[in-house]
Length: 268
Image 1 (cartoon, rainbow, N blue to C red):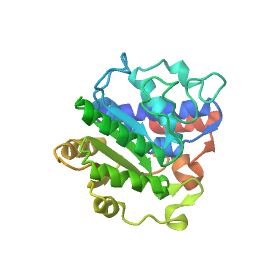
Image 2: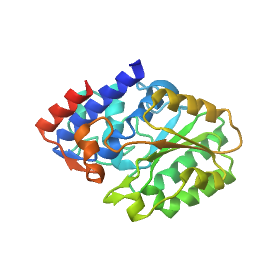
Image 3: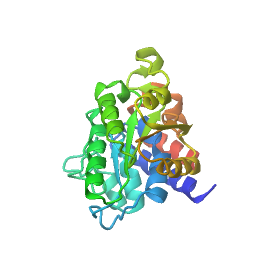
Image 4: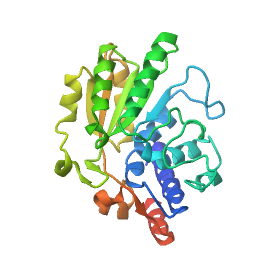
């Protein structure tokens, strides 16, 4: 196991502990993006936990804002705030609301949760970065259920028109959404071909292979004149057996102290 894989395990443990602290939450889609979050925060992004607002930093917009617990666990592990803050999730006065809020949480670059809108925000950040010429890379993570929103495709059209090669979008393609499987609700078809037809530089990879995620990001950065889409083939609830087995029901589910112990044992 390499260092990044170990970090991802530690973040998953923090993620589950965070949700258990309030009894239930969005575990499935949080766990499925831990590996890309690890790649970004520990290898790829130009950031500084001691100066979260520094000019010219790379930015990440997690458009599927309900994956906030996964983001919070990563930010905590990276040193943006102390671990005790994790256990205030969703509680009165917290700086860690259910969905990401840039006005509350250090390290969160955009408030999200209204599905479909986060990609547009990331596109705006990418345009701004081009204007400022600060050489920042703007990253976005969108969901596959979220991609049924028309605004995703309006944004894709515009990003391609503006040739935003400083924009790298990840699709968390776990093939599940809130209340079922994509193929049963609204099958999205071949997302690589769809984004390619919108003018994106596209890739499809194992979304849990951190080294491959990093390699693909670096490859995408060499392609100029087009925004980039990296389809991450993922497992909802990745790394926690009871969440993986729950299928779509792990979108949001209760976590007991016994379940937490089981999850930690399985991750160590």
